[in-house]
Length: 370
Image 1 (cartoon, rainbow, N blue to C red):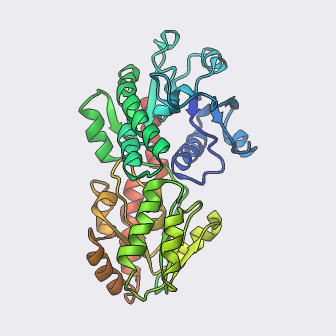
Image 2 (image 1 turned 60 degrees about the vertical axis):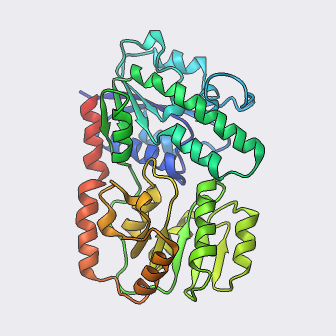
Image 3 (image 1 turned 90 degrees about the horizontal axis):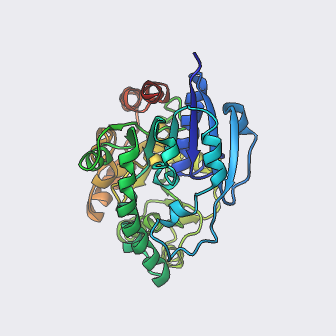
């Protein structure tokens, strides 16, 4: 018997070109390939519609995100109150299929009495209030800082709605631990991603690479840390790729001729740079969730230098060089820039990633819950 599933997505998952929607899209693809009929519900706000979703979903329903709502008023988190549409509820009530809520963002109807007898699964992409608290810490604009603080408080209270879920699927072991301290029926569902096979090149590259969406404060902070404290007195060529870098980052890069900032790199160009680099360097100052760019780098790149917050309890630490201070990162980069990435390194990486981050294996976990 063909299984059916409603999926509520916080954003249009195609193209899968940033963290959260990467997990959503490749999860949909794996479900389709496993024979599940998907009724997809998408809150849209700027990304173009694509016929690609109709190839893997039985139905695709679009709802406008209500972004005109004042983000500073109301008791509900802004990311939830703006994803509220009566037509969505009507569509969910057309059958009795299970419902997958993608992120706390999409959980407005999780405690809806009319859905009380439905199987409801929530995919948690982050501990959202922790994520927004960190955004507040690194933000310098007063109004944005105030919004992030208020949103973190509202998300802390709203998270209790998870008591209405039959299953809560965390994306990382750290998030499993955090959620299990507050809720029942929490389990791990590793991140879904674009990679089918490890494509890392053996041999040597000639530069170090960092990439991320630089409009996100955490990523811009990591890039500025690398420029100002790690590459400030190295001569190794360093490339940063990401949209919307801060003025502070652009100014910092101007001081160093061996550092290059690419502001409009395409997904294909980032993939090529990841593969060609000798070292991909990925520090983070936020430990919630799992960084999909880390998985991509391990599937596509050579050496990878990270800090503890990037790999703690992910099972991936042994595939990376872990350095927690600027000085330790400098030491590791100087060592690795000359060290060939060989067949033994490649074989070990394939074995670890095949076990922990295989889409076909992990989709069976989700189908089993249905």
